[in-house]
Image (tube, rainbow, N blue to C red; front, side, top):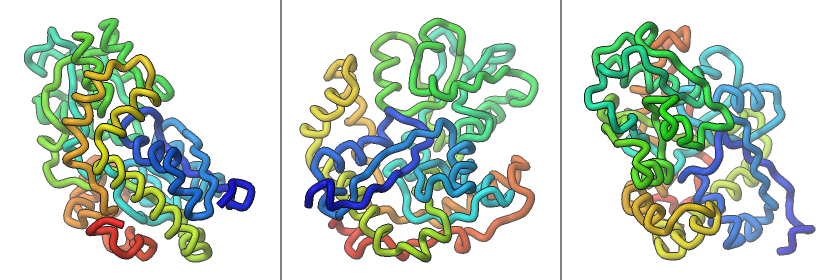
Length: 308
């Protein structure tokens, strides 16, 4: 199908450059969205909270964000939306707490500055949980720098302006090779059962465009499953997509992350319940949301569990 005959559609992303992007990049390169009759465009709205606000205004119909900003937006009436699938980063095993190499004990972060995408994004909330687990008062013991469009960089850690972040691949492997950081632990040590990465859509769009939504998810899942089935091709794609990353860095990133990708789109409902409870505990949402009321998987293509 030619691009001229396809429907133009924009998918909103809360950030750019990490492994969350790779299924989309692969799907675009292999023409999986075009096969579904969709000429897909990606619009980056830095920060999950900002993306949720854009969706609430009707500027974007489908987005990729984490559960903290989504739950905050829904709980506070900003976004009338539903979870339509899990992203490949379904849980917190992918999200790594890293510090400057000289930080040997996390208590040494007291008085230091840590980086977050934004206060309302996933890492803004999870950073507080990680610091609290380390025995620090997350409201008083550290300073926060909101990185926004600079979130996908390790410059602050490399220069010593920042002393901790929560980041994903391939930046973790890049920082390790440069000697700019060391990995402390995955964020799953803070919350071992937590549904994090989400694909979400506005309720009106789900009701009015179910077939288009099914095609969007099918194209996405094809990209995710192709990446895991063809790691060498995925490696070559990422090296081209992120020039400047050495092949060894990409290799390390893929080895760490591809085996634990969620390529089914299915939601861990118990993990979503933990996410809801966590956001209530943090005071981000005023009431306990019902997890089952937040999810609509009706557009997940048949066969998503076993591959498409």
